Length: 117
Image (cartoon, rainbow, N blue to C red; front, side):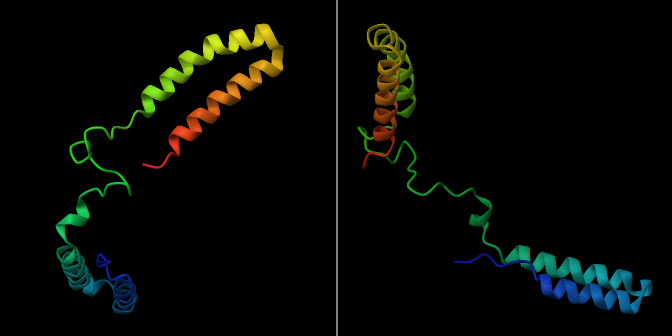
């Protein structure tokens, strides 16, 4: 269902007519514009004012019990694991080992983020 838009073309035409008629008809012009805006707003459903959820988003109450989003936990654990792994890799294999360890952590996070649900 589409939400009715304000009658922009009608308002443009009314503005042009107001310019032609002059300031004598300002009150009538304002009343007409206000009435049209009120009609357009009244035609909109109340649900349009409510925020829409993101596609694929389900509130926690609607999700099955085991289907929780652990993205924050995964990010924190990745950072915690990166500290000792990068130290061990840098000491034993130098820069290539450090890059390999950090790349592996990034790939694990990317794989986790884009896993099928």
